[in-house]
Image 1 (spheres, helix red, strand yellow):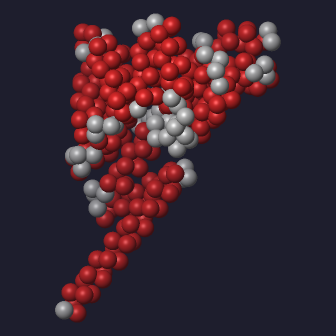
Image 2: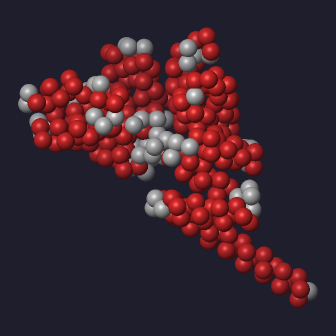
Image 3: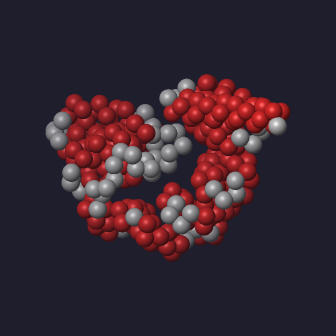
Length: 292
């Protein structure tokens, strides 16, 4: 009996030690101590090669560093350790998609796996907003010959609307923009702004702050609130986010231009132009700002 008690106590101590280290991994990552995160996570893996916390944060670090192969390996393993976790399948699909963007030779095979992972996440969690946005964007961007479909994108917009009114309006605005139906886009943007009072800084999907700010600025409606959402988006931004941080700077420039603050507008526009894609759209805006 004494030996059994000692064994139980030893196991308990090991469990508490592991839990403490898992907490330390999360804290190190949240405070952007990535080398420390990596070191602690690898120590967890030395004791248990299937430690979920370790693979999660090593995958996040790899994704932030655009090391897609490493991120794919960590997230794929997570989907096998815990097959019914929607987030694991969503993360796996996301990094497959990012690798596909950079690897045209293997893009088709990667996209098929990506769609399968996103579908799995959506099936596992009927309120998984990120997975539905990912599927909506996938069906919009893929050519019809390899599975693209406006109809399927619209289906996911309706699913988003059933989960959240504001998400549904933003999804429909996004589709309208993609189809160059700009008046319809503005209609849905205005509807989103009317129903966005529950979207706080802690809202899980960070990109919603960018989308709401863009809607407000495009409609010259609630500019101060738009700047608050842009600030939240920038603070929480990750490299793996679907919208580059420079787009937020671009809309900050537009917001301050609407507020007639030429100095701040130009300062944000200069930050936005560091992204080559955003820079293409900045010349016209710069002319409008300089004319203030």
